[in-house]
Length: 284
Ligand code: AMP
Image 1 (cartoon, protein in one colour):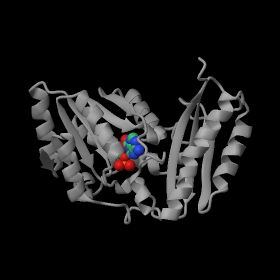
Image 2 (tube, protein in one colour):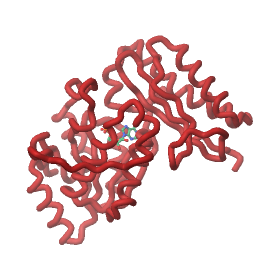
Image 3 (cartoon, rainbow, N blue to C red):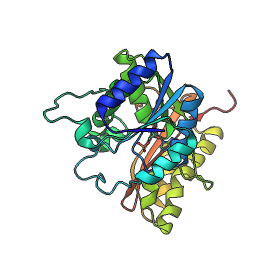
Image 4 (cartoon, helix red, strand yellow):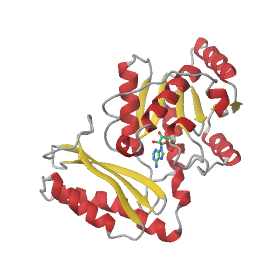
């Protein structure tokens, strides 16, 4: 497994592999790898000759009040996990290698970034699309793999790839959960044992909404209210948003369709967690 820290070396390596006719898959991550990340890597490997990952805690997607400094990091552990999954190349640049002084270019996807997480994190997606675009130019993948846990991110990146004619296939992978249902996240590391119990309210509220929908409820306001009440009943839980929205445009729905996205962001103490589910008619 090769570990590359320089942009120039990464570009040369990717170019050489492409000239050999190799198919390259990329899994971008911020490190502190867990089973969710590893699943993305397995999927990437099954579609490609060379599996590349990036480990980069991207400063431009954090606002000044967010957890950039505290974000968990474990370079040694990550390298070992990557090796075990069969990663061929790990790209792990420093921030000043990625962002040259005087940079003044960004990538902005306009509409799907306005909803859900875009409301409470107004600069987040511009940071994400800009760094993902840079990683695509540096690592030159044919395929890039993203988690459905970050549903909006997957939507935004897919939109960018389509709109800018990037010749890259985006693959989405279902959310990997702990045995008790909690969606795996590097940020789960922040939770105390008591908070972790309350964090289960996210997944359980998705189950509740699913049950209501399948029992025939079609009023989004009623489902949303039940979800909010359920979550708020847990200690340490404070809702950022609960949205029943169109799975493509991410716009809030007035009436429910055959397929709907329920997306949540909830503060558990000082930790902001997200989760989502496609709520659809099981009879169809
Ligand atoms: P992050 O390191 O949190 O930026 O995540 C890197 C990639 O892993 C993103 O595409 C995430 O959507 C994906 N990911 C994170 N957690 C999970 C999970 N529990 N299941 C599936 N994919 C995940």
